[in-house]
Image (cartoon, rainbow, N blue to C red; front, side, top):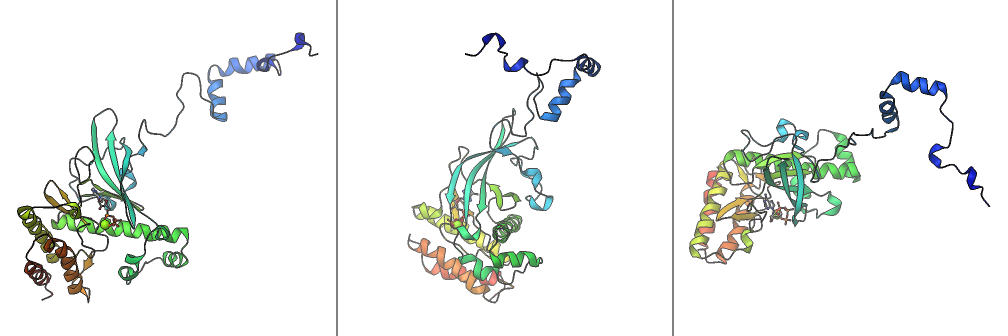
Length: 314
Ligand SMILES: Nc1ncnc2c1ncn2[C@@H]1O[C@H](COP(=O)(O)OP(=O)(O)OP(=O)(O)O)[C@@H](O)[C@H]1O
Ligand SMILES: [Mg+2]
């Protein structure tokens, strides 16, 4: 039988305060708790715990994680949220692709109502995607750091991350060049590691614009889309580029406006011995979609020839 008379609750067990303790506390005053709190990670009464989590959402903005060269061309469009107190919220996945997953991301400034939607394209490491683009296109792009080469050859985690990061950077650089040249591409907001943030092509409610492949345009719209395509490819060719992977899946249509996406592999046709073939293949691939819907097939060959002249290959 326990002797209840001798029971002491946990709190008051232990050493009674001595006169020295009381003197120590009196001497330090109210700061004594703060001192212990700091030492043992306690929360002083009346103070909030200090954490680095944003008030809502998934993370603080990553804007300041990018250097000037890792941000889109200036002047930054008004809708780009550059405030350092902004918060990123992932709203869903737009598409899982062969080489990357594309997410819908909102960047908003707390308590202001300022918010913007972006597409976040996150490149996967090569273990989790199909290799086809790595083989031919990467040839000749030598990394200055041999550590990167060795790691990639060994397929180490660092190497896989490096390859994914290279594709992300290649697409960021391509978007930047094409945006500056005047091609209708999503504005590249910033690049951080393997994540590329760009203008969201869709509506204000987060509905993504359809891919060209999903549309069934009437004759007038078909003609208009072809003219827009020819215009964009002309600007590309004048700048010396072919898209390199053009298809009705890599073209979005936002309220009738054609937007070119998925550009990490753009080809410098002037410096490439197969430049003309890349130009022709792009036009043939997407041209097939148009002719199947009623475009005069002669227009496809005409566009190829015109682009070759624009790129001074013919
Ligand atoms: N800026 C954007 N705005 C809206 N939707 C986008 C945007 N970028 C990509 N998407 C959507 O994500 C899909 C995949 O994007 P993208 O083609 O760039 O990646 P991918 O990895 O090459 O995918 P896939 O293998 O399907 O071609 C697009 O077809 C489009 O539906
Ligand atoms: Mg694609």
